[in-house]
Length: 97
Image (cartoon, rainbow, N blue to C red; front, side, top):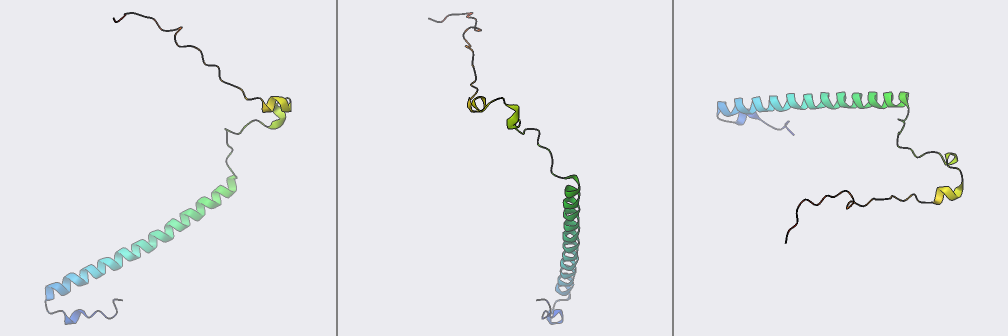
């Protein structure tokens, strides 16, 4: 892409200098991106290696095993939630007409 670029054909020396500096900057940044991609891949590989060594994490929210419940009938019975009345705890301190 930049092989056919001929900076000698640019008449203004200031423009030549600016274009050379920008091309150098692009080349430097491109090399930095390549280095960071390689480092990122290395770190991902290291994370995967460490995960394999540790095994799968244990999930604390796992349901109790089936044998912990006594019978199949108890397994199928949904346990409902009992909600108490709030009016028992309310105090009336004023009345509006």
